[in-house]
Length: 607
Image (cartoon, rainbow, N blue to C red; front, side):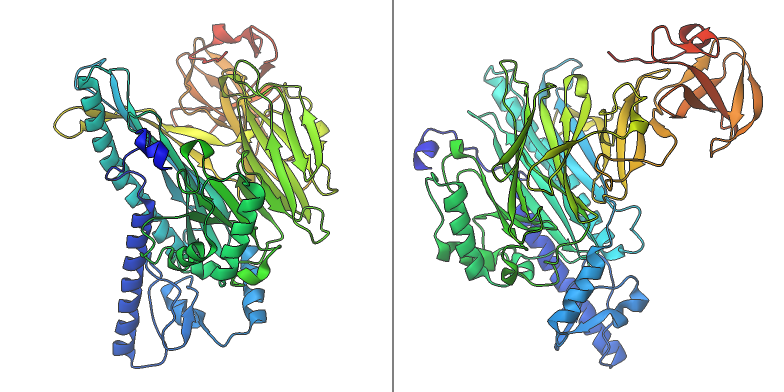
């Protein structure tokens, strides 16, 4: 580490950049102060042994006068939600098992902002991205968690905009030295590691570039109690830090045997006990919570030089149950958990009581593309080499007591291919799409639904000069529930766009009972070049008659069956849905007896 620093390749610490540990500390201290204030107010006003407290962002796990509150669904129910510390382990485990079965369905909106000089066409100075997370379907039921996420979102926005100013000024100094092709950046991509009735955990992949020899990156995490909205400390989940530290040191020696600076067990245990209590200023490790365990991430430079990267260790609920508080360590019957290609994941996928190691890899060709995909369970491997791809998004899914691996592979032009593997017999086996999907051009073309939500250009002053342009944002429906996965596929019927369905993972390759793909195509406007008559259908797809549409009528694409039918919605707001049938498999496309381009203007096709 010292040699690397002398070479000057270690990035500096800048205000507002990657200071998640300090932000987490402030949130926790504020939550605790508010929580204590509400308790005192309840005692003074009521004079009773029943405590009333709000379920806003600061409501938390309370340990006062021998009482613990796990949160309530409304203020009126708060008193009834209080649990005594004398509850047995069996009571806690029963409650945890019930609530882990309740899965949440969050959305992740990611904002991208760019800074440039005042004059049009000037060089790019800086760029940032940051997440915003919501639980729209469960907001009322989990109001405290929703409030906590609102606070998370607000802090992300404030710190990111401040970072954009700092990055912009740094880039200007670099440009003044003649390096006008350099821009500074701070990127944050978030995923949901766990989302159930017990716990909600976010994992972030952060990176920045400040103009030095290389950039910096790290994986961080945030965890909440789903009922109370309380920001969780490491010791809220792990009850035996000494044993946990010993286990981590052992795992590090097994999985990263060549580390330059392996941690000392005593120092690591001390850091665990202080983590998120505001005392571990050095941030020896980050952590996040999954349905399977607690993952610890050691950032670059912590246990080795920059070239050794970051190290990630999974403490397993199944493998070491005694390390954890039972409330957060019950492995659910059903879940989805993301994982990275370079770390893999551990779970008892065979049901024999032993934790198995699942890994995914591939060999690159000279162009930088992967030419194969290898999935391994322990020493059993399966390699597919029938397609090229550039990146993967990986998920381990448990449903109906079976484990599956989803690999969303992104190829040229962001084209997505889903490969599914069953893992239950100890050897990975590829699953194929159901016969009902064979009519589509590519039944493997499925991806996690993500739509662009903002194409506008917005400018504002950055510091004394310069401007920022909010180029766009996108919104993703996070995969958390095997029984309700919103997946999208590319369609080329009357235009090129993404369209989605709700799928389940219960039968191997995902299946859907929805007859239609809902189009994410609000930006496409199709205008009739001549008057035409089309069939009309109801919202459920039943035929209701026919309607005449004059020249100049503007439609948006509502949905398609993925074969020969597209339903159009008049942009003027009419209730009738126009159904257009045609042959979309060849070019030029045929629609209602006409060539598409002779009947409609405004079609948009991608290569």
